[in-house]
Length: 127
View 1: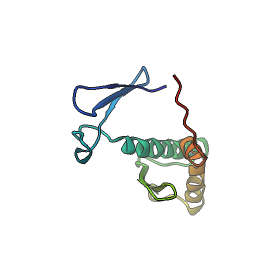
View 2: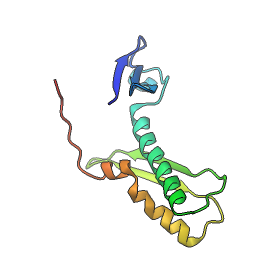
View 3: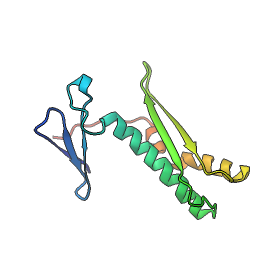
């Protein structure tokens, strides 16, 4: 569970899961100070982080050597009239076989956040 509380600055918001704390803010054009990630950026970061962890976990469990190279994932949320699209890309280390590259890219569909966001989402306000 994530809880939030307002900060003295307009729109700057602290959030916590009880063990970790972060902040988000609105951009200057929306009245914020741009002092932290926007909520949209946090949504993109959630997917990018999960994709990255999924790739690394898959590689580890299938003995695919990623070496000391960094696996990079980037995500952009593109709003549209009939829904939004998450566009993402992955940069894998050089030297992987074509077979391992295909297996790693296929493993992305196993990302829990990818799976969650691929299904309809409902919202329920609890008093």
